[in-house]
Image (cartoon, rainbow, N blue to C red; front, side, top):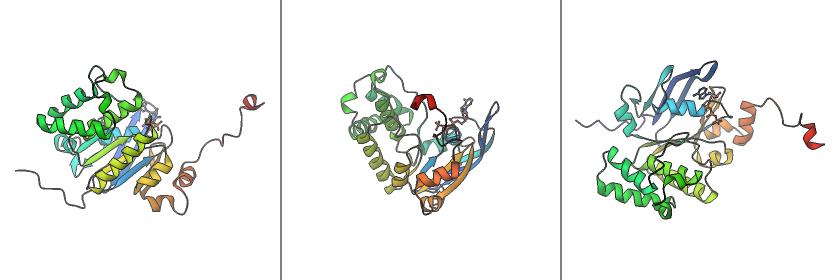
Length: 259
Ligand SMILES: Nc1ncnc2c1ncn2[C@@H]1O[C@H](COP(=O)(O)OP(=O)(O)OP(=O)(O)O)[C@@H](O)[C@H]1O
């Protein structure tokens, strides 16, 4: 019998006390996050805060030391087939087959998602066109720029029409036109009922497109909720600096550089 559709109030993603320790480093320290269904959720934090570690555990790419994650109520570790069928992932560090062309990558992955040939062909052409990779469809991935690889990886994440996109720094290395295209695609995706969680360092971008945001620092969530609640009366940038702070202002030291 097919699974019943998730209740509308079931969160797209629940991160329940995820924890990961690498040697001496606590990369994720009891992280809780709730991504409401239909939301565009931004995950921000300084370098090394634990964003990639948390997202990797949340999608079943990295085994946690503790805690769990559910995609529309399905545990990614005990019910991986169902959870992953609902998920599209843009991971950190792209692992694309370098000796295939962009088009071949999508044609190769489609059947692995159980898609028929016709559907794969049609979606491939649409994705390559929308992401302005159609001219590069025949170019081998090894000859792609970093931004082109990012766009192709995004296409692979969307090919099977997932309900939740988990995107680790989707705007890193992409040009402003491509960034605009990606923003439009993600807005259309959520307007159509999809849900997104993305990590980014670009505060104005997160502020302009996300309705929910979480700030993570040293492996801990220091603020999470609707954007307006997290930033209060200030900009997200100001709220971020206040929440996370910094060890230096950048004004001290380096006298040799400015003399
Ligand atoms: N495989 C690993 N082995 C050892 N330490 C790791 C590993 N992966 C991450 N770490 C450490 O865990 C901490 C969190 O790293 P993570 O990549 O999750 O941060 P991040 O918030 O994604 O950073 P950035 O914004 O710089 O990409 C860092 O201190 C990092 O050095």
